[in-house]
View 1 (cartoon, rainbow, N blue to C red):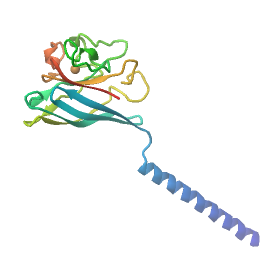
View 2: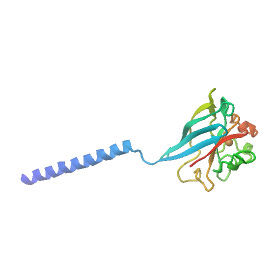
View 3: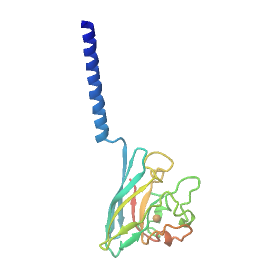
View 4: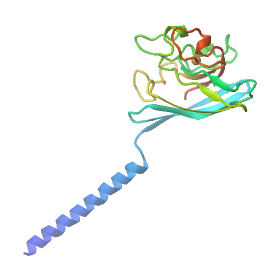
Length: 193
Ligand SMILES: [Cu+2]
């Protein structure tokens, strides 16, 4: 009889410890989600600036959000093309400006970064337009599963980095268009880092 009580005591003790540890683990998971990768983009142009944040939870899509503002004569009210471009080098004095970022980010066996007409709007770096209000302010919030911040074939942190470009005109998001249909001139740029 005494033996039995001791066994029962040990069992209950063991079970309590197990439950305590299990609960703690579950709580920790709830408050500290696993592996959120993050990147930041400091957008700059003539009288235009802002910050975009890229986040990716483990095995999920990438969310791109942030605020961009500028002089409404430069960042005009309405829609502006916004894409991830292939090279992480923003050179405003290049000819044309920011051409150092190359074409749209589009790695892979069927890639076609340039000319933009070739694979637009199917590039991996193609994204929804930025919508600017009358005061030259814009909030951006988009989700894309075409790229990753994590290791892999569509990781934006490839050998030459990547950049986000804001264009003068709206992206018409149409196939077989011209460069102007994909946003035309480049007015602001930021390296993904
Ligand atoms: Cu672009």
